[in-house]
Image 1: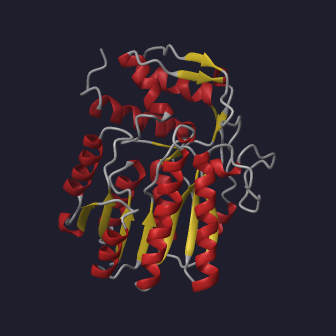
Image 2: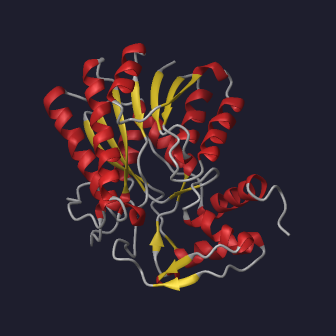
Length: 326
């Protein structure tokens, strides 16, 4: 049994990670500030759902706190002897980051520094950091490999994540802090954020929400089901690797137009997405090389896009539509 600090526990990937850790008997000290990037009630429901399904609900300890709050983070590290920190909390979204770049750096870089500083004072627990495939920018190296310099981010969000990766190297170099940065590729699945494409397509179909389809859907994404991502995250929390950067994706890109078509077929309705030019912060292709993840983490993504989309649709139909599709 391990004791793990999990930031962003109430979010999409965080709630699934908590469920996985609790399922194997770990103690999860979860932190989330329940901000209003999307409805905080949804995040509270995520925590309640995970707690209700846990073999031992008492092993999930929830703290509503901000990772930038030095006193609160210091108190948590002082109270608990953590074996690992899984740091998922962040301001997310490439396009949204252009509207408030200062906030993105404050949370994503400043918050990470606060946690790393506390870790130095309290035993240096292994540190797993959630990064993003967006750090690769408009790279011409396909598939994306971790040896790419990744020094041309296209928006403040990936710039803040790349900066935090580099900060992690500083703490490894100076103090020997184990720091693994995991670059996530287009995660989707149940409890997904409402601003994610799979969710948006269904909101367009059933709620008439206006949703853009960039570049006519002629963009490839390495869609990766949340359970596969979580398997990689938990494996990283079990392995002190020094300093590593590791891609977590499926390694099989799918055309966005085809992804939308799968959702439409399951819903039995056509969407009315609005064609828009691709934003300057976006790219036409994401494609993960997962060789390093396989070697270092034993990572082996199992969920096909077809199966993952069906599972997401089943969840949306029950959780969002209440089982009704008419």
